[in-house]
Length: 193
Ligand code: ITT
Image (cartoon, rainbow, N blue to C red):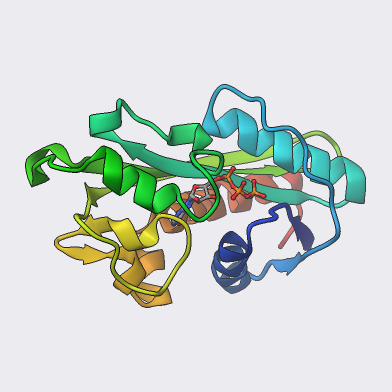
């Protein structure tokens, strides 16, 4: 079954392909427009993106809305993670806002809400989270976005291999839950991947 990946973020796209391929999903990219993400939650925004791509392409579409929630910043940037500060300044802005804040107050988590919308209007949704802390400096060249400042046990996501990140990341957890729900949905419909 062919699915269109509804993202304009290259870092996410790589992870989507990596996570969807082993499920036997043929995941394709297309030139799709970017809808306004005016939902009040990760799940609402994921639905907005998947529904728009499904409508535009006529294919089942998979989107994720994700972000970093920092405890010390009352959960910010959260659903505004992609729009928080100037492009290229986002990690530095988080580090600056946490300047002088001790390790025990630097807790943070990533959230990924995945949504697949089918041309008949049905949707399959799942969410994943992963918990860690904001480092004192940026470290590691791997991954994208806030990876190099998000740590678990002193190691940033930017220092992980792709397989290591997928095994512990919000997106890895979300896609694992999504696969199960998708298979259940397709079984009920008498369809296969
Ligand atoms: P699409 O909406 O086109 O998918 P986007 O980048 O705008 O791309 P979001 O609105 O979901 O996506 O914003 C999520 C932001 O949160 C993203 O731009 C990153 O800065 C950050 N983020 C999400 N997942 C991340 C991850 O695995 N590692 C690091 N940063 C991540």
